[in-house]
Length: 64
Image 1: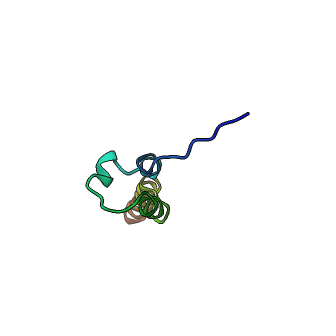
Image 2: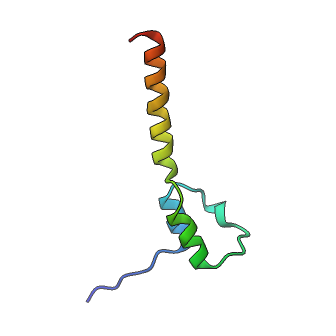
């Protein structure tokens, strides 16, 4: 009744926050790209955590 579609390697990388061109010219197989996307750190999460740390350090520095 339901049809599931497997995500393309590019779609997996987009979900992780990488740009489309990230895999341009990659010689690896789709499996290798899926594995690389799965083992990577999601860019939006990293940016958020680093931003929060920077704000905390800045507040501590100014005594707020």
